[in-house]
Length: 98
Image (cartoon, rainbow, N blue to C red):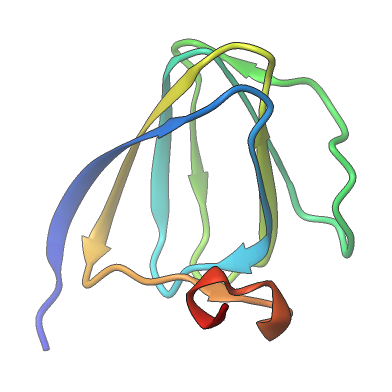
């Protein structure tokens, strides 16, 4: 199946977090407003400096990571070749199975 380029905006509430997960595609993330953290550790530890409005970075395909936002509303733009998808490293964390 041929992929297609997709662009999505994701809005997060204040101090929002996603547990460890990965995607089957490379993803380009732009912070449109707010602040956003991304880390590649084995367990959730919001470490490092939060990326501010205007930051852009690339997440490689199939690379487990977790994310969180700062104290303000955060809006991201996500770009990738579809179809989309997410895989939670610990299946018990998958909200689609609850």
